[in-house]
Length: 436
Image 1 (cartoon, rainbow, N blue to C red):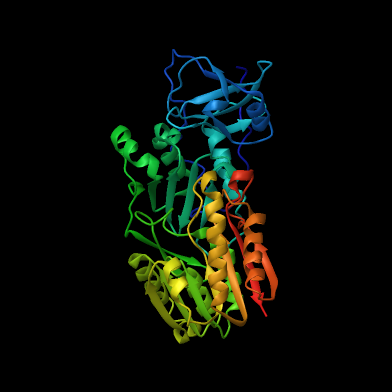
Image 2 (tube, rainbow, N blue to C red; image 1 turned 90 degrees about the vertical axis):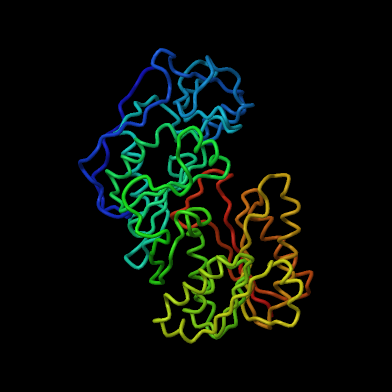
């Protein structure tokens, strides 16, 4: 394969993930995990898959591979050739997953060395320059495929970074990846999080476990950080995702702007962030409902951390442990001025999509029943298998069927630090309806 060196890294901007990018330090190289005598792993794809990769889609499934020159190893660099035997793309190979290749690069051949990886890390950091000030110290630094790091997420909580892997293809490169992050971002601690399907095999093969501190020193399992001046804590070793749901930041700000003088229901509240924003926005009362006692404990702790704010101190905060579906079906006597419905993903696969749409309709119907006149419904979905338009339509249909006239205030999608660059990446959507 003809090789071209990566272009020189751009000038170093102030890093939004801690210290400035370090000009010196360890020089790791993310290498292909292949025997030196085996030769490069070469793949050819079926026509539809080839066209998709050429157009920028970052996934190659096992059934899309027409031929390969030999069995591939976990984490090695696979080179994809087109039907005319020209270089098309390269990516990380995962023989243990139906999603066989995570595409890293499409176009002309490149030399994958430390400079190339560093440039890719710098590019992700540059996309976030100017998005946040010192009142927001928790945000996403790398958003997987959308930032050129397929199957990998890096979140910042103050000086603690959390690296979450969704493919085992990164594991053979983890030492070099850790050294690169340390050298360039200089976190106080770097914590490893693993998707559920990776945890057991990772422990057996690589002696690594979910929640392991890869570098630095973690002072406590709960990492403090700021979001628009509010104080939060992320459970970086055992919490969901990387410890906090950073993707709803913009919607939380919108809820804050709508909450003055209102009684607010925050269903599926998790750690209470929506409710806390509502309180700072002047809500008279906030009711957080969640099935998890640990989540509700975090919600109470977050309110306590922010009691110095007069509006938060004035707000009456109630927490209820319950299954939200059951609670909504029985709470016929409760009335609110603002209802937030932010359930976990209700469609883990395409087969679950019809049931998820029915569930979203049910939730919107019961949420609307609890609204007073001029009340506002905020309904969100994080199910990638449910498209934004069909989710919005389901909520509108629920309002129409309930015979409640409404004004649609807004629909929203992904925040800037969670870019979505291919269809499957568009998971987050939210709609705001105000009833007459």
